[in-house]
Image: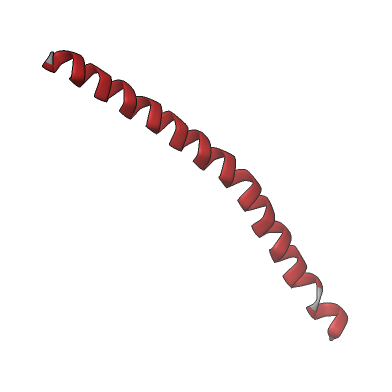
Length: 50
């Protein structure tokens, strides 16, 4: 039983680790793109006001 039970949590840990490794750069990239887009919009609005 012990041998059968132990591999499952390890597989889950590996999957969760890979999910984090894949999702973190995607989220960071999306955040950076969003920030740049918002900054561009703010600059355009600022120029339109002046």
